[in-house]
Image (cartoon, rainbow, N blue to C red; front, side, top):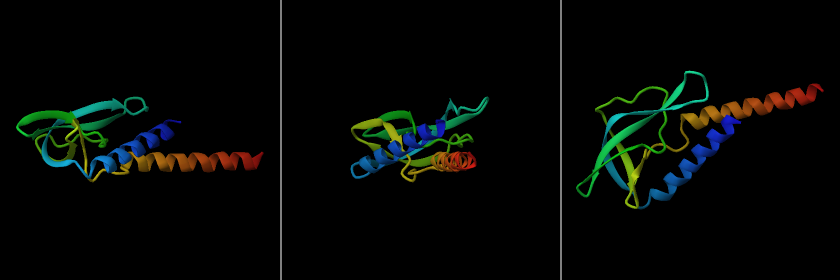
Length: 123
């Protein structure tokens, strides 16, 4: 079930990225840290990079909406983000799309489905 939730979340992020891409600003952002969220496994976390960037003279700091990793980002490094002028606190990774989290969720969902079919066939 957690895999389906993860797949749905990643697909929504991908749709959002496609929607903001035509009007978004491409901005260079400095990685200032990571935000940790539980992954569902005991003691395991996903890390979302927090970046700082400037738009029209204003400074913003936010986590990248469609980027989640298992390793910390390199603090002090720079990356390119897309930022919608309407939602400046929701930067997105322009190369993000269906990321590693979604691939893992898809593999888990496929394997779970195959196991279910196999179990039904054995009955």
